[in-house]
Length: 113
Image (tube, rainbow, N blue to C red; front, side):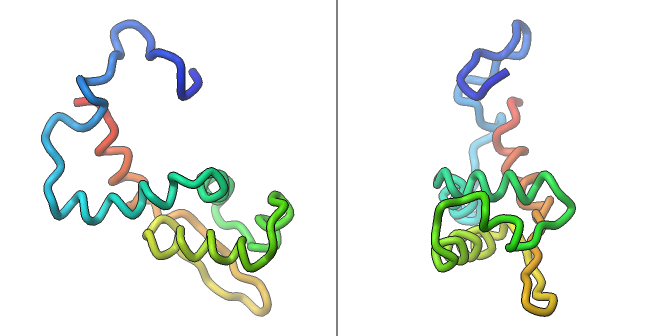
């Protein structure tokens, strides 16, 4: 099923696709930057690439985009500051991995009832 297709019969989302209870102000403040970071197509693709592996070197991310290294660094910094990824420098390279608790929180909000 693609993002734009309707869900199968019997799996219709709740009225607005959010969890069955309203989001608290505290949770909204915590989760909004994550959604904002993923709202950029490049960052969404980067997060997807990183999530597909246990960890990914920046040297493996950079060739996938026709962007300068500074722009790549900016996007990765945005994902890191939003709490979606974490990283560690090893020698001259930086390795990134997904923070599962961040994606668990996002998916809990988006899961129907």
